[in-house]
Length: 360
Image (cartoon, rainbow, N blue to C red):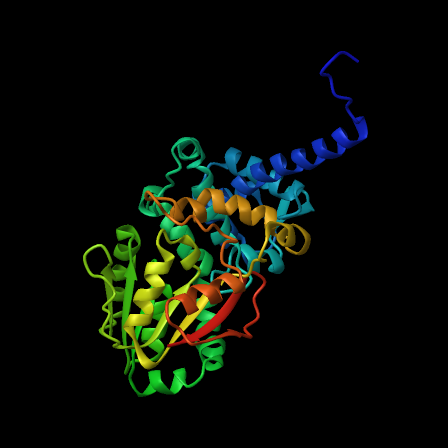
């Protein structure tokens, strides 16, 4: 062995090659899942029984050769079941995951969000040189739509029946008629859900993404809601007049360039008896703890580079907290630093998030 050469452990290299090869293969299959979702193939197969590629192509108006290659790959991966004699079938279990938008187990939106993020990787090379990330609007309308899909079912199935009753006195206040703000409201799925559930209350959504706000306003108009308004904080800041009974932030504080300023604004906007309800990523306090205790840490750090940290560094001097940047200890310190005197973790089941209630 010459000077400077390093001995290679062949077994270890083979192990790492297998790991990397698995990632590379999974990425290709993920792209095919995204394609199947966008074309509506899973939805067309749901409950349809056994179908040949030709029959499915005819039903959907697609080219049989392309569909045959796609569906054979899906069967080879065990996503679609092959029944022999050229027939394929989508099981009820996979249909629940990829063809039922209303299911709490739905995963198709996550594949859409993944593909939109990966499409921005080349632009992030410049971020590594300059330190500046991408705003939500830099990512385009498709990325905004994917994010909305990823969170929709939690809002529809958990927010009103499970999450709000876990907060002290909030449901009664909203039923009587309260005033609510959702800061970082995105496409407005949470607020639309709340506005429909509590027609006596008034709701305001605040965000910096005009693309998301356009989608939110359009969806609210379709629902015919008159107790709901959306605001771009570039021109309509959160009012510091202690007028809100409830302010929510769902999976967004760690994305913000100036989280301390936003939390101070939230404190100033709440009534003395109001509540700030927080959902954010349930990370550990240190990298070492995430390495040891968080089985999703690798994926979350990747999401951070592709999305969360990028947003947090999208302007000079941004906080850049990242996906795992607000564990409970730091969220508590952030709240107390803004003047909140009561802070507690709320027991709401989630594989990813932690939930908190803060009071002035």
